[in-house]
Each structure stands twice: as C-alpha cells, then as structure tokens.
Picture 1 (cartoon, rainbow, N blue to C red):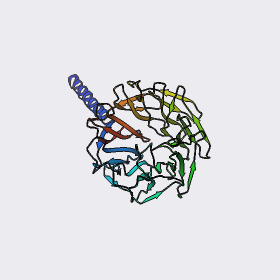
Picture 2 (spheres, rainbow, N blue to C red; picture 1 turned 45 degrees about the vertical axis):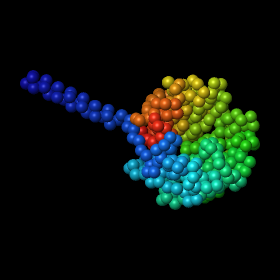
Picture 3 (cartoon, rainbow, N blue to C red; picture 1 turned 180 degrees about the vertical axis):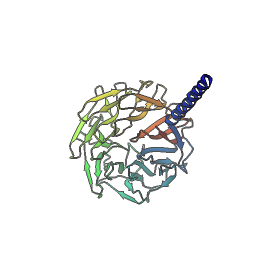
Picture 4 (cartoon, rainbow, N blue to C red; picture 1 turned 30 degrees about the vertical axis):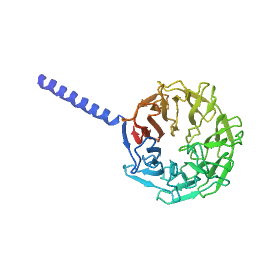
Length: 376
C-alpha cells in the first residue's frame, strides 16, 4: 500500500508539472506577423500596422511596389481588408494613409491626390468613406516625408465618439491643428508660442492623440525652430511643457485620464522617455540597452488606459527593439522573429490596447516592413 501511495504521488506530481508547463506556454506572449495583400517587397515597402481596437482589429497602411500607399484593416480573426479613398493618387508617395481606429472600428487618416495635395478622411465601420479639408489648408506639390511634411489636411487620431484631431499646412507652409466634431464641424487652433514661418507651427499626435473627453496631445515648433509639447484641454485651453534637460520635446499619446507619454532629446540629441501626469509631475525613464548617440535611445509611442506604455528603443548600433513598460515601471523588451539587426531595422511597436496586446511593424534585413501583433 505504501509503494502504491508513492507511485500515485509521483504520478500526481507529474500531472501538476505538465499542467503548469501548459499554463506557462499559454500565458507566454505570442507574436504573429502579417502582410497586407499587394504589399511591396522592396526596401522601404511593405506593411505598417498602427492603431488597434480592444478586440485586436488593426489598421494601418502598406506601400506597394510602385511606392503608393494603401489602407488596410485586419480583423480580429486575421482577415485583411484593403481600401483606397476615392481620389487618392496612384504615384509614388501618393495614396491612402490610415493612422487611427476607435473601438467601434471607425478609422481616420489622410490621402494624397495626384497633385500632391493631402485631404483628411474618416472610414465608417461599414466601409463608407467621408473626406474633408480644414479651412485654409493646402498647397499642391511634392512633400516628403509625408507625415511631418504636409501639403494639406491630415486626420491623425479618432476618439470613441468619433471626434478627430488632425493638422494641416496652409498655403505658406505653416502648420495648424484642428478638431473635427462627429457632426463634421471643424475648429482650427494654434498652440500659444507656435512659430509662423514655413515648417513651423502646431503639430498634433497621430494614432492616439485625442482621448475620450476631447483632450488633444500635440507639439509645436516656435520661432527659433525649437520643439515643445502641449495638451489642449476640451475647453480649448493649452498647457505647454518640456521635461527637465530637454532640447526637443515630442508628444506621442494621451490616455483617458490625461496622462501623456513620449520622448525628449538631451543636449547630445539622444532620446529619453517621459510620462507626464495630469498634475504636471514628470517621470523620466530609459530602457536598458538604449543607445546614447544622436537619434538613439528610448521612444515611447503609446500609453493605454491603465498607464502601460509601448514603443521602440534604439540601441547603439541603430537597431530598434520593442518594449512594454508596466504601470509599476517594470520594463519588458522583445524582438519580433525575423526582424533585421542592422541600423534602422528591427521591431517598432506602435500601439498597446487595454489588455496590452501590441500592434506595430518590424523591418527585416532587406528593409521590408511587416505588420505584427503581440498578444499578452
């Protein structure tokens, strides 16, 4: 009887061990990569995933073999639907560029027509597309890169009720912000202190730049071309800020309670992460392995409702790696399988949803981008 008892105990221990290993395998983060149909396979081409819903539907853009942009929506079951806004150009650096999606599945972004002029759009969950232009926007002509440089109206972020924040450049090349209400009314704005020369002005945050109550994350370039961050409250008031030691402050995202995150550059132009609470308190951080040279370092891109943050960290060789910073400050680094290990390559997270599923893209050794989803 004693021997049988021991054997039963050993068997029980084995079963518990197997169950524990299975549970560990199930809870370990999983990463899948994907490509939109028609995505190009040359350097600078491919699939770029950006925003994501709580149910893990992902929006983004892909660049085809001709250098033209197209939109895509990857449903939570993995099915990818591609789309183009009517009137979008078909030449290099033209086409459709989605950047943000809300929980209902509405998407905003912009498209560039054949003359090089950009226009905002919103795509409803049923696929219907409405285009719009901010008052005073536009001057046709080539413009690159097509996010920082704009020749018209750019939808940037959409919140749960369908309000859209964006930016536009006027006929003199000065940037201004706008808020488009769900009924289509557009209100334009400029951050106090924003410069008025070409290439200066007010720039809004893309993908997660407007929270549920309508607070908008933005930055502005002053008359001396120095970049600062700011938040526009729902009542239209502005609060500008720079973390201690900053010579350049970016603004990457805002969550429902008004906490913002992004990165700032020090005197060597190395990047460091920051979190700014609604009361103005800063928390500064660096991801281990971050490079300390110009344009290297820690780059937070998104903050979710609980305060968890994701983005890339650039090492001393110029390679991108992903990170997730928990609310308690604990940082987990990761690399997407197949990501390149050369300068400018690697893993670039763009967004983390409420459950900390992460969407983004990786750039392989050939310089081609592929979308990814990392599930917790």
